Image (cartoon, rainbow over all chains, first blue to last red):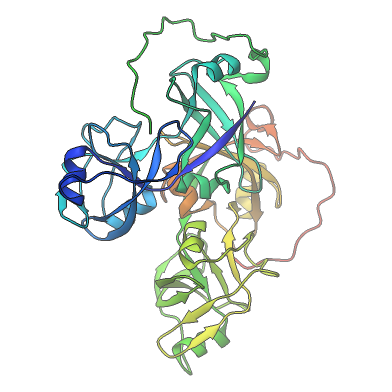
Amino acid sequence: MQIPVGVSARHIHLSQEHLTALFGAGAQLHPKKALSQPGQYASEETVDLQGPRGKIERVRVLGPVRPETQLEVSKTDLLKLGMQAPVRESGQIEGSPGLTIIGPQGQVQLEKGVIVAKRHVHFSPDEARRYGVRDGQFLTLRTSGERGLIFEHVSARVSPKYKLDFHLDTDEANAAGVQTGDEAEVIELDGLHEQEHFHGNEIVRVNSSPKIEKPTEFVR
Amino acid sequence: MQIPVGVSARHIHLSQEHLTALFGAGAQLHPKKALSQPGQYASEETVDLQGPRGKIERVRVLGPVRPETQLEVSKTDLLKLGMQAPVRESGQIEGSPGLTIIGPQGQVQLEKGVIVAKRHVHFSPDEARRYGVRDGQFLTLRTSGERGLIFEHVSARVSPKYKLDFHLDTDEANAAGVQTGDEAEVIELDGLHEQEHFHGNEIVRVNSSPKIEKPTEFVR
């Protein structure tokens, strides 16, 4: 049960309001490169970040725009900026700090939205069925090689907007010595050994507590 | 079986010849802070690094001087410098690349010596006996918390010059969300479950192949 690894470098999602403030009235994002998740793209646009103790330049803006601005950085980046931020799932920005975003036409003093992305695996509903995984379930994945690591408590996210991908940030990828296109192996589902509980296409429900369907979340 | 974590930021060990070339005739290192390993210290001195695509300033020189110059950086640092380097144990610098080292009194074009430090645990002989570990053995360690990781194939290094410490670089520490002073748990010795094979102070030899004593290596 192999899953492709996708490494997320630091990036920002902008609200339409902030896109306008940073790039000017009528500004739009210009897709540069499609990302692994359907409909998502890296844009031509970049912004600079000013933290309390340091600046990071040319941070890629991902599109399309979202209801709320969210900045995903690594702990290494936070050290350079001189600030701290919580490890969070995409969209969970309550209580997270802000910083100054600098664009070609203006600046935004972000109040909240700086997070370190929590590792996770994206599945389409078909892929989830095939792998015997349900939304919100925890997986244990192993990467191989001389710096191989075992990642426990990796949350599975299932949505028609998703495609199979194990998302790590650059710190995690460097620590594991992996890059986008490498693969990780699922070795456990919810703390039970995968090889004992995964049987081909059969849907496995190792946790029988009722699952309330979450509203569709924004893709990261 | 808990082991303290020691995070190694980028640093350089200099030969006397290179110390002189960088800091001038008669230069000596001035100890600033003792490190966890006996006799080792961070010095007041720093150097700058110039790689093919980028520069890193104020890299700490560790003392005392060594027979050969060795630079230990993270994969994140390598990206900034614009070069690659192998993951190696301290002292294993054959075939590794060099770069330009810039000091206040001169520059050195290093021919080899740039490595990414391979994760490892230091033990004094007494600690090794107490933990039932021998030099060269592989351990599996787990860090806890929301970014907890399992590190397999961590080599144990035993020497009278060592003191108990699990050494990670900054990428690994950021990926695991740990810092110096946190603890990691040994969960396996040589692939056998620690809890099944570790019995207090008893010396456990899970691998019975004859062990040839290695010559004392330089401490990192």
